[in-house]
Length: 187
Image (cartoon, rainbow, N blue to C red):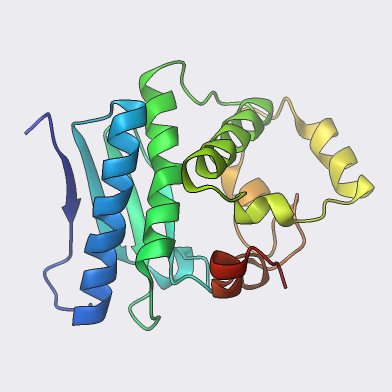
């Protein structure tokens, strides 16, 4: 149905009962929050078994493929939480809203703005800064970014994902921790 936001789970039985509950609870909370603020519907969220695409400390990660499709990558070996799912999807739902409006752009400059806006949306809706807002970026990293701002198309994987990111040298498993979720403290 075009007026729904649906969560699609793999039928392989790869997720345990606790993971399914965390996926559903986090998804339902994110939808409830986002619907009132972003007016998004007609969206499919696909939870997939993809350990290589997750934020390791969270066991999940997200990617917006289009204005109608979001992938929620999950590591079945992790104890994911509804909070991690909710935060991931709130961020991705903001990207969906931008895809349906002005778009996220194709240059690195555009992508940096889009990521920053999604992080601010997380903070505004969830009451705490995005985990990535706590990372220290060196002068050298800023220089590399400035030199590459007109990269088109932007290489999202190179600049934004993982411990080998050209922008951030802090491993993902350090930047997003359960401790931060409850205390606001970074390691």
